[in-house]
Image: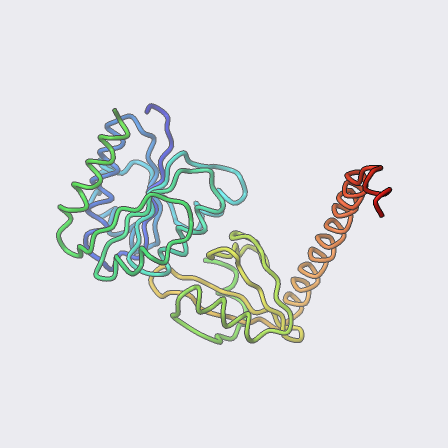
Amino acid sequence: MTGTKVLLLMGCPEVPIQTSIVLYLSHKLANSGFDVTVAGTGAANKLLRVSDSESYYVKKLENLDKTLERVIEKKTDFDLCFAFMHNDAGMTYAATMSAISRAKMYSVIFGRNADTLAETIEFDCEKLVSKVVHNPSQLKNMLDKLVKERST
Amino acid sequence: MSCIEQMKYEILLDRISYKEARAYIENNSEEIYYVAPGYKIFKDYHIIGVPPVALGVKGNALIFTYTKPCYGTFVLTVDNEESIKEIAKLREKETKKENTSVKKSKPSKKAKKTQVSFSDIWKK
């Protein structure tokens, strides 16, 4: 997996589990040899940076719109993309990423309306759906299983 | 910050889903153009959207979607010299597309002709 470029695309940070699960997945993938970049809104990035002030779990943190802009302009691209979403806007950003990038897409859908939101997805992706809001354990287990399957 | 936020725009709808925004553009525009997600308008705004991304024209005004991760999708309209330029670009793109499809359709007509055998002509 060395050198495989992964993007963790964060949506609105209103649902608490997003920050912890992104920190966890970033570290887990980096430890498995993936080249991980995290991109989010200003608020999402600030939450992440305060939680990980020494950049121990997230080495590369970028602005969401700037990252998409660079993919659109073909200045960069990724092999895998985990798009985190709990609302329609998050789904819309993921649909855009799916259209502009060659990355294999994983949609991580959480929050109280996770099931309904998952049904609105029309682009090609693997969905990880969990209605969790505060407790990241279920989503963590789903991601652990996925990473284990892909690593073997 | 995108250039949109520094422009003089009018909000037609706010905090809705992308599909609702696209339906509004389709039902409230004189002309509709479909572009790919990431299509650039004005100086530096790449449209975030679920394909097909709709752009509407009403007079000299361009109607388009603007998505913010925490606030949902907005339908905005801009009516100034910049929107006139963008509309001209869209019309030109559409004309080129039509010309290309006309050119592409020619060989297929020819292909159909070649598929007709001598015996078929004889039957007629």
